[in-house]
Length: 116
Image (cartoon, rainbow, N blue to C red; front, side):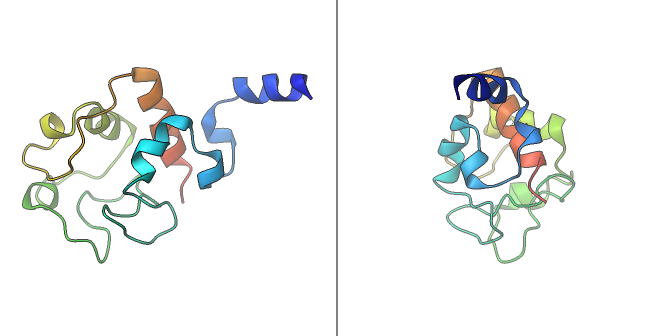
């Protein structure tokens, strides 16, 4: 059993099926406001975020800054946003300072990429 857990720990996050149960530990801070199921909460759902135009998930009231950002989310701009939301999209209203650890950001971004 330990060998299986050790091997699984070495696999990239993206090889697991997307579900809250397979999210990296760092995603817990995101899950406080964002769902991965398609329903909005305090923040918009993150299901299908890769390739989606920022500020466009149906039924969520976005800030003007997010609606006019004009980019679709990809691994690069999502990682930049997670590092420092206010610097990446000045004037957005997400009350979050960012994820300072690059490996945690990468794990979150890789996980989000699995959410179709």
